[in-house]
Length: 267
Length: 229
Image (cartoon, rainbow over all chains, first blue to last red; front, side, top):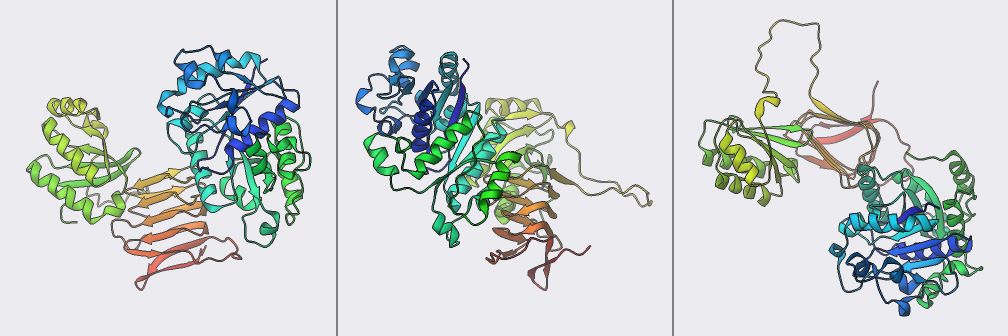
């Protein structure tokens, strides 16, 4: 087995990186994949909370790097999925405690045993971001249909291109189809028009997400949640399956998006 | 630009190249440079600087104060060109890149009264990719972009700016004050468009159809019109 390393990043904070990482991890595990999640947001760790594993942390990423424990000791097994693991970030240190070379070393050790290694990147374009993308085979950019989030995503895509880490794929998160219809929110086409990268998923705004994250049960485990469904679809696309985009009653966009999915439009 | 005897500026791939007179007093030359930057702060803004001091020996102390002078104005001193070993050593001690000057083409001095069938053309840079947010391009000549210029990207050129794509970022043509400079784009919706000392923004219009347009200065204001061909 040779794992694919997928980094989830965004530039802007608060757009849903951690939520996306947690949900994609769970959704991939449900598909029978062996998955390890790494929280690269050293100093502001969150992924353990969203995964409901906060109370099981003994060792973290920095403990592994500084040799206080074995890699395996820092891997927390998920309560429900025995093939899903989390390596939490340290809460007491900062980004400089980890280097890009450390991340490459750790992911190289994990690669033979897993199908997917998902890395949750911190916001920003500094050291934490560079750590998170250092070993990435594929980068997923999460953005919201807002001008400021799209601007930051554009910056990130430019930085990735400069480091030959492209082409990244786009997750458009928190889309409100009614607002798009009324012309009050950017549509998927508006966003891809600027960013010119391939869309891998559109996640609708969904009231189920916040309570799910608060209770440590990622929303994708809720069969009634549209956002949960969207994350399951993205997970299947990550495994190489061709999954048509959900209809979010977005004006005329469905067939265009479908066409884009098959034509593999990108830069 | 009364100081062009002591300070000559041109755009290069790595940023801006500033050639300083070899004969004038160092104090006077750096003062002229500071004045020049302050006059045209928009053109210099954020640029990476290479300084060409010719064969003048420059001490480490002098280089440090030049570096500080540039940094106070938001510029970074990146590289030093010189034939003098003293200067090269001082620059290396400050962790600056160095190289000898012979790679730099001089200013055009030929008189050339004869008419040649060869068209010389003009200096410029060609960028064959989309400029995303955060990218800045400086040029002492013209700039051609074969791709889009996204919001958050900036182009500052002494000459014209031509965008074979969608122009949505900030552009400044004729940044040294040339009011005859133009900006062309296949779809002209810049965040801000400047020509010499004039500034305009794009009117918000959701229903506009993209079409090739050219922006130029006419009767003391910037006008945008359909591209005539």
